[in-house]
Image (cartoon, rainbow, N blue to C red; front, side):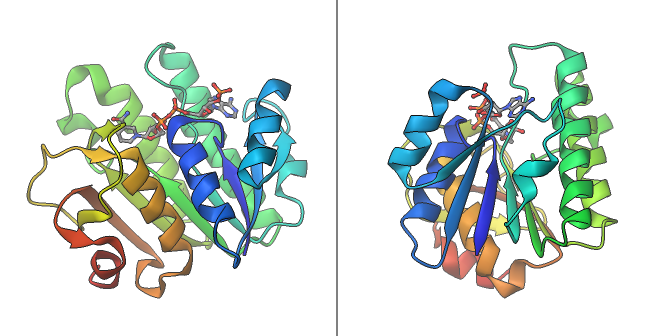
Length: 213
Ligand SMILES: NC(=O)c1ccc[n+]([C@@H]2O[C@H](COP(=O)([O-])OP(=O)(O)OC[C@H]3O[C@@H](n4cnc5c(N)ncnc54)[C@H](OP(=O)(O)O)[C@@H]3O)[C@@H](O)[C@H]2O)c1
């Protein structure tokens, strides 16, 4: 597949780019915001495209047939950026994917996005933004996969996860490396089409966990 990674220079995004580029089945277009991030993307084996979710980025969708959305406003910005990037940026990306006839859309969401009001007060606005984006994707008509990890760590990937509509060990964290691998494998794993599921660190090899979804 020819895959556009949105948020490609992010901590998870770069691991997604690396994993995709290592697989000869994929061509990778890496969407970044700054020119100084482009060389690293080329080094990883991707074609960089300079674009911002808060501007017109429709050209970034040309010549691709799948999108992995791994962008996020992060915790150091205020609620207005959460709305602009995590909700509106994602919604625009979904609408552009539809208008460009893109086949597959894989969304990095978050555990708790199903019930924003049940989350901690400090996370509610963020979870609501993720919830709204996920709902928009579900209604878009695209072939989608929505992945909701628990807290992310920078530990090395173990290749093993727990994946379920609702995971049992809800306080378990998961490494960004394992999340990246789930995002990439979901592109081609038939069982993940039109599915929303949670993931945490666990004991089941990723491909096996995804085939049991
Ligand atoms: N942290 C957690 O525990 C947790 C748990 C569950 C889910 N998640 C989700 O996982 C996502 C990825 O996490 P992460 O830690 O890998 O994120 P990260 O390192 O903060 O990377 C986010 C990326 O999004 C990009 N971005 C921000 N605003 C943008 C815009 N307007 N246009 C284009 N790109 C933009 C950033 O670009 P720059 O490089 O230019 O800044 C950055 O590369 C989070 O955003 C969140 O939605 C996180």
